[in-house]
Length: 370
Ligand SMILES: [Zn+2]
Image (cartoon, rainbow, N blue to C red; front, top):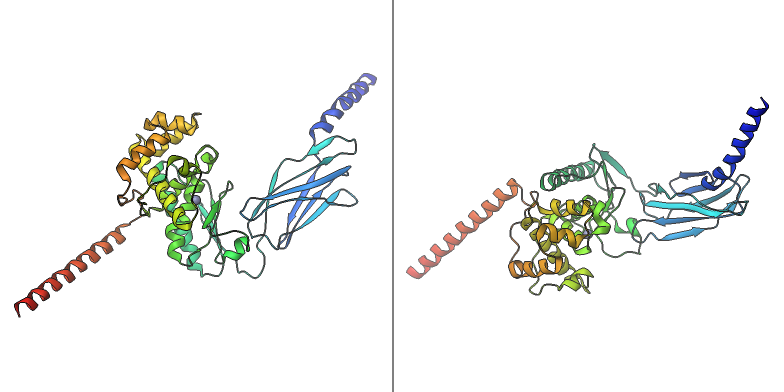
């Protein structure tokens, strides 16, 4: 019995420094519509809470908590932060034994606040959150998201990851206050997409912002390993809009660094990036999935491009310029760009124009006869 007691005591002693070094203080986090309550449930010598918002205009905060009976707490006012914003946070500080600690980074979501009548509709593939629009609007966004995921699956072999959240802000101010500029949306690691119709039209939202941001989400696992012209070009390609290319195309370096200075230059930059990625997809054996598979296998972007396309990006840009520049982009490959109803509508417009032309020609002939 004595031996057992010694053994238990020894185990207890041995376990002490291990738990002290590896355990971080327990925490608790609760979100309310107007605030988030963060608590560190142990008494420590000193602590602070570090919060980062993952959204544009969100910012970061380092907060000294107030000390309570059983630890520290922070009441974080979220009234100025957009609903559904994801906050990343961790605690760090010094224990009473003067050793340092830092809790693992966690996330918490800002709840919907204010007078907005947030609504929600979902299926296995997507959850749509919106306000200020009828139920049919949310259903349409859900249907569009599902269709875009199916299109990605068809074209690239993989749809959107898990259940995608699409958050639609009808008022730009609700999303980013007065801080951020004109952006159409934002894709996040967590699968949250935010979009609002900047231009005020639902066509802009459905035809441009939504497919663009969903494409970003699709590409998110590769994001850190791809040049920005490729990720933006990929998103542009997925919209199937086929923008008019500029007469003067961007040089390789300018393409790398988004060297645009005006909305017109920005549109040109996006158009070129979209055309270049579209062209790479069409002219690489196995398309973009082959390039991404090479990156999966450990290659950096330039090596992956050389291995699959046979050129680095500067050479590819030269080759693309020789083929595509100053030509109106061909009909986009994107299957959603023009559905059969749109095609037949286009056909009727062409037929209508032909009829009008024939009538005009005949009328002018009659006029000459007279
Ligand atoms: Zn983008």
